Length: 358
Ligand code: OGA
Ligand code: NI
Image (cartoon, rainbow, N blue to C red; front, top):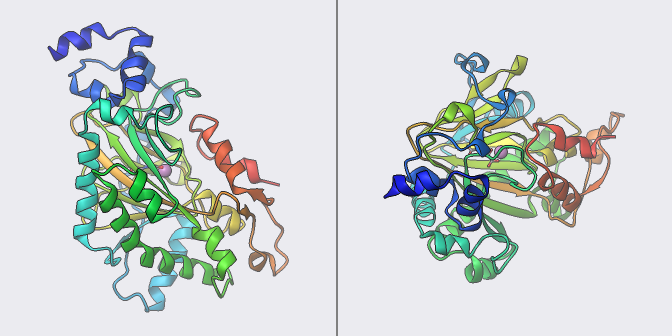
C-alpha cells in the first residue's frame, strides 16, 4: 500500500501538501519507501557534498573536561574556539542517562502520528515558542532540506510545562538543567581570554539569557548524494551544545573550503561558537560554517541547545575586547533583528553575519 501512495504523490503541490501541511514531514515520505528523491529536494550541484571536498585525515579537538580546574583545559577550549569554532567535550558532567533519555524522547516525539505533530505547525501551534516543521524555511528555499524538526524556545519552566509536548517535555527540561553548569564553565573560560573577568548580570543576559532547543530528524533518504540534511550555515547562538546519535553526518568547514566530519563519540557533546559570540568577541572566536549530509540507509537524530542573548538585548563587540585599541568590526544590533534576518532567508553559509558588519 505504501508504494501506491508513493506513486500517487508526484506533483509539487502534492509533495508540499503531504510533507508540510499535513504534518507527515520527510519522515512520512521516507517511510513510504520512495525509490527516488522528489525534485523539490534536489540541491544545486554546488550545495551537494562530494567525496573530494572531505578531509578524512582532519578532526576537530576532543577535550576531556574531567579535570576542569586544570588551566590546560581552559586553554584548549579557547584555542579550539579561536581556530576551529568547533570541538567535542567528554566528561562534561551531564549524566549519560540524561542524554539517553533525551534521545529516546526525540524518537518518541517523531513517532507521534502526523495528526498530532500537525497541531504544532506554525499556523496551528498554540504558541510561537513551540513549533514542528520541515526543512529550514520552505517559503524562501529554492530546494528543500531533508530534515524535520521540533523547535522549543525556553521562556520559563511554567510555560514549558504548559505548552511543550508531554512526550518529551520532562526529558528536555532535565537536559537543559543538567547542562547549565558546563555551559557556564565554557563561557567563563572563553570570557577570561577576552579580558572579561566577571560575568555580571548584563553579560549573563547577552551570553546566555535565552535558549532554544531543537529536535532534528533526518530520515533515510533515497538519493542522499543529491540533497542535504541541513545546508551550509552558521548558528546565530552564542554557543551551541549539540547531542548527536551514533550515525554521523555533520561536517564542519576547514581550510581550503574542505569539510571535516564530526564523528560521533559516545557520551560526548559537540560545542560550537555561534555568530553572537563571534560578534561579541570582535571576530576572535569563530562561528564556523557547517552542514549535515543526508543518509541513504539510516535515520539520524540530533538535539542542539542554542544558548543565546535575549531577543531584547543589543549585541556588539565587548568593550573589554576593544580596550587595547582594536577596531570594532561589528556594530551594535538588536538581537531580535539579527534572528529575524536569519529566519527570513534560506541557509546561505556565513552570510548572516554580514548583517552586523561595519
Ligand atoms: C543545526 C545543526 C547539526 C546536526 O541544527 O543548526 O547544525 O548535526 N545541526 O544536526
Ligand atoms: Ni547549526
